[in-house]
Length: 379
Image (tube, one colour):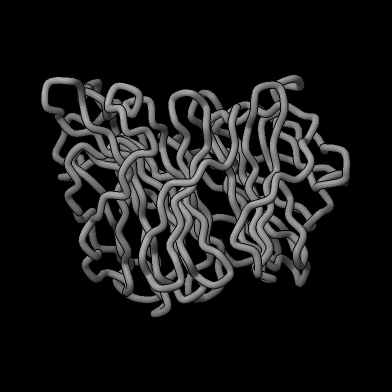
């Protein structure tokens, strides 16, 4: 599948460094609130009103950018949504368009060490205020052990209920689930021997899958639409690099996983019951962003990731035909964290990234027969 990427326009960049946020320009072009990292999950989402919203992690909480009108090109933001002590952020969107946010928070303790918990909020309408942040607590009641709590993952069930997943310092994966009456159940142990970077998806049928990196093995957990419990399915005999897994429903009720394979050192695609497929190119430093779209009338999958030097690489292939070969193209951009993909109100592919200046940059699919992307624009 032909892919074209055009280089971004770049201005002069100095060498000023802000602690924890990378290198920024010395002039006044730096945004008032520069992002220090991207969120995990789908941090670029299309609202019911046709406007895109992007989220990132700032020094003082969540940063949010919102399209001024469906299809752009104008944006507002970044708007600071304060959450003191927020260290990690993940995003998920329900079928109703609601955006769910969960994060790891660290606050000063009472002398026995910091207090670490998971916090959660919802955005019901594009550009509108969030609900109040509420604490979901910590599976470890001991503050010393609780400090090892990892970043959360989010998944929305077929019924639209929120499931928050978090890994404790001893490698146990826990679940806290929203009940049908809107209340929250307690933390439940799901799996021991977990590593960081759980990938989750709910298929159109309502079936939920979790891919959990383990120690020398990769675990797969399933939950049927009618079952409240996750069942430990067969273990996958491949070891992935923790924090690199992504998942996409590529056919009805069938998913494809993408990860950096620890033994091969490169990106692979894997469908349950099949061999993994090497995707070539440079191994990404985090999860690949994936999106199904129509190109020239064909069902295709777009993939984009960040190389170790920060460069953004893009490719596309016929959906579930990775074995036919993929060819990675540099976009000309560099980023912090991981890039994101979404469709805009006109069905165009949109690529979003956080530049090394902490600002949001956006590139849209240009006209033509292939996946040609316009130069990225700083928002």
